[in-house]
Length: 370
View 1 (tube, rainbow, N blue to C red):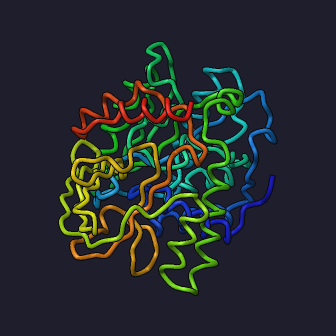
View 2 (view 1 turned 60 degrees about the horizontal axis):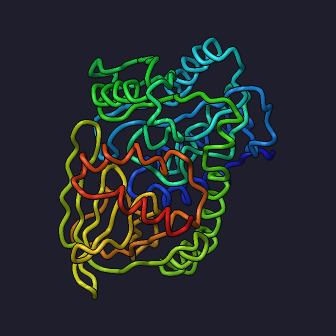
């Protein structure tokens, strides 16, 4: 267990930006919240074996469409959401909350739980609902998406105050239905909202979460910082080397088709490459890459678009026609993943929403590495 510092904040946000895969929050938001956390208290990063084993871990996240521009999340919104879930969870399970964790990595997602950790003197558990960002709560549900009898409690807090859109919502019940309520609340609040959710016993998190996810973001961020003085290509090389991934291709962005609907960003990006024009499919995050209908990468692999000019990962909303980019691919087997992203029950919804296949690729990949 170690104290998290301002240096850790910057590294976690930078490395988290790669694992954001085009989503995962905003660098400015992450730096603000992370620096506030290490000023507010002394949050500690803990291996899951270092915390009390007879207790609960609460997941902290933000829910919505990353390209939304009418949202408002204050630091205290994360604290309030945590309090709402903590109180309900301790009553439901008759166990104390002994730690908090992030839903995923991202420019801001990697530090979402650091403020509640600092404010309430709880450890930041070195784990996440997955190491890379994912679009649906069900994918972050650590394998419970197909369990109709599984009951949980989730809360969201935030919204554009000037528009009267501030909300506090606590939902108890079936995971699918409460997830849909939270997604609707994010839309009504202005597009993005702070959340606390999915309280689980430590033993379950040990079995199902992506353990070590935050250390990975910090390690990657530190490698990128070290490479920065040498320029963009050095940063890109450091990302590939540290993650064990590779650059699929480099090229110019030809077309961007991005729209926000139902609390999600949906987009396709066309990139000119030496092997033909590539299509990147996005639902909040990059989920698949194809050239001439041949699939090159598929979620839950890490797919990240890096600026060829700066070497830094790009959010989907910042990718414009004419940009030169490098597309990173890291097979999921090279990184810690959660049971949630390997849960086949999550994928029919994804296929309906995006109109492209996922499940067959997942089954094939699981069989290959079984």
